[in-house]
Image 1 (spheres, rainbow, N blue to C red):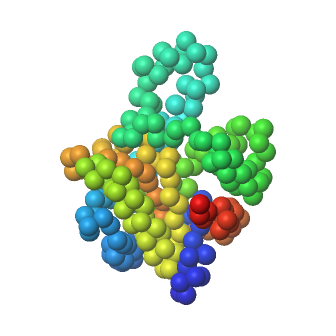
Image 2: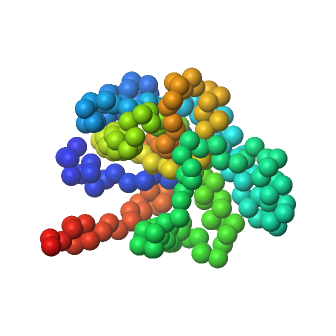
Length: 239
């Protein structure tokens, strides 16, 4: 594909088909992503790649934890505290808080993006049930047949996060070039324990986020693309 077609064609896919991603295709995508630059070529990241039954089992447990956590949040404060203490639904993420408070400008952009997505899905702002159900789909990877969990070595501090982001972008563009879709998901960093049950994560590596990968369906949600900032907002003015 033409580079600009790949770049402009990449978007967050939220409806995947059940078509299997062949292992050689997946390996090609990963090999191409390894061409990404990193600080002093340290490449301080590793991936846990879940497919088949493992993907389904992890998704099922993540969904269970999300539903339990969501239920706790709706309880009166005394019960909420008790449930939080006794439940295994509390986040066990490596980075806390995984979703902090957004500064006003970024909260405004976040709300606008969510509103645009829910409009495409036909979900009213007041429809809490439908919004919860859509959020829950994150934890089964929007039915994608491949879930990739991104780990970094914290010894490289902030450069590891930067390098992982560059690597993920390369991976997503490579997938787009091959007719596949992806969705980078910060929510998949909330619970680590389900991944540890299926993968031998090297000591010291920390879970950052996840990424769903597979073949997109024709669902209208996959046409959604939020607006980007303009060059004036991007560029820092001279003194």
